[in-house]
Length: 310
Image (cartoon, rainbow, N blue to C red):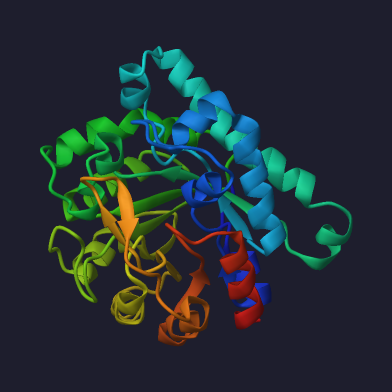
């Protein structure tokens, strides 16, 4: 494991790290129906080459870091789909290997000369993603902190032991889940970022104050960054500023397009935020140094984001 933050060299040399966008968004654009309890993890099982193609698309668009297809890939979810625990763990391994192989295949020749070596972040999505009921947008869980830690432990440890450069502990809607994951991270020697899903400019989805969530992980060893994702872009500048005021860790922001998710129909409604890419200037001005996109943000938008900010 690296002794220093894996994102630090890119931040030092370039001043900003560009993340990828929504994995599911890009898969749907390629014609895949993700109406399945496993969501994008179903493609990990059935069509892994499609995930590799999406990783490559984001790298070509300019991403300095790609996030693996393990967001909704939990041992519990795989068990309900008929997979054994060893099979589930091998699928987690596959998600990392797809990212590593895509990165290594991309970072050759001209790309190697022009770009720093892209990083691979192994995604650990929230408990609500496993429930597949939209509760990652509410934080309304039926588990306490100890039970949340028990839910996440096996997957987090498996991904922490992988060759991924770091973990992406992302779309976290509740303070108890943030604390549970901070405790689990401390059991490993992996680096990770923590990213909260927020309902407004100052609160996680469960109503917790964003500063409290940032402070809950600020002293945890090997925290590479703290920030927000899967949040409306209009809230990002205030959230970034408030997080940056209470921690010296790099701050990241990878919001969604501005459309609203409807859990009852598992669909998106409304229109994306006009000028999403131009709006990213305000995230950086507020203090974000790691930026990208989440739901409904595809490779074209990430390419435009990189061109706009560089």
